Length: 508
Ligand SMILES: Cc1cc2nc3c(=O)[nH]c(=O)nc-3n(C[C@H](O)[C@H](O)[C@H](O)COP(=O)(O)OP(=O)(O)OC[C@H]3O[C@@H](n4cnc5c(N)ncnc54)[C@H](O)[C@@H]3O)c2cc1C
Image (cartoon, rainbow, N blue to C red; front, top):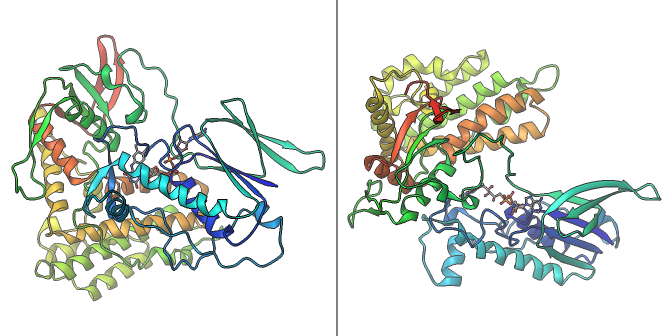
């Protein structure tokens, strides 16, 4: 009997179980599958049912599915040790375990229509993912010799040992004292907790918003917050609406309307800053546009003697793909605002790429003439870091500028006048996936994998494509208007001072 131990029971493990079910459904085998998670398998920690309804997902209900398409032609392989061990008959092509996307599932099962483009609470995904696990289990239970066991526990140790016949074997130790022997161990643990050095009283270290005790933030107290990503948005909602405050939006208001916040009096004052000093860019009401990349997929032709493409060249190819996606969408969707036509665009960007120059640098002069509105121009550095180089007359000026950037982003994200933003989003997702597969194929050096891909591209990608739903940016602006969220600016660092924590900001 072979044994597969999966540590972690979130969406990744769920996908693996569905793939195993597809691979093994007509293939008797002897396999023990163990799934370990202290949280319910399916949703796991992030998508569990017992969390606040104010914690939303940042993907729409229709964008979420855990199932492979019915016409899957790729082969989902069973683990080698399991596949090798029993019968000699060739495996049938896997028939995927199919199922609905989240929006369809909610409509069918709960008779509730959330709307396909709605951002819904994270806890509403829990039952959908549990159902997927049960679909996988139903198939696996029907395969002779296959057994699936769930352990509600935490894996505390992974040990390797050599058996008397010289075979390598692993043991997974659980916090309930049991030890599971494994031929294959799959670590599907998602985001791990980090240990952060104690920083004195009043400091709340990084952690999962849903698992943190926010009663440590008293009403009316000034709180310094470092980081303006999704964890901040979650925190902001928990200590405002979660404490009885209300956001009022007049009926019939258009999308992107900033509500009026009515405080409960229980809110702290959140002074927030980050590296960029602005929150991540909003998700788009109209969604991303599908984009066919022109440059990055052919990156291998720039490989050097060591077989890798250097980070600088990859950066140029990335910029080229984003620029072409942007201006092509502008021409297609808003032709009256550009005279930069596709042929000229391709010619200029091709030339820049071949000469190893920045495409946006090469395009600058042409764009100034042919795309007159600065809001239609692709300026990657400004898009990525809108406060860079700005000098402020004082705190009020800084705060107004940040609020203005968020307001502008919200207007674009909820309107139809800037479909180039949808193209940028679509191109960046495709480009990021392409870069990851280039790295997997060995075309990116270890150093560039960390500094270029892991740091700078990952950060820009998250900022551009992994932001909050537009309603949450509207909430943020309403709270700023109410004086409950204050902006500190970019380059914020926080240190422990004698009278309490102190912050510095590059321009606040
Ligand atoms: C707060 C938050 C919000 C997010 N929101 C979104 C979103 O809206 N949309 C989106 O697409 N993505 C979102 N993500 C990204 C998210 O990581 C993925 O959607 C998805 O959950 C990843 O699945 P996973 O199975 O790899 O990891 P996870 O979902 O993190 O699951 C890992 C599981 O491993 C378990 N585990 C870890 N260590 C051990 C151990 N030692 N022993 C046993 N079990 C262990 C954990 O309890 C957890 O249940 C969010 C992430 C976070 C942290």
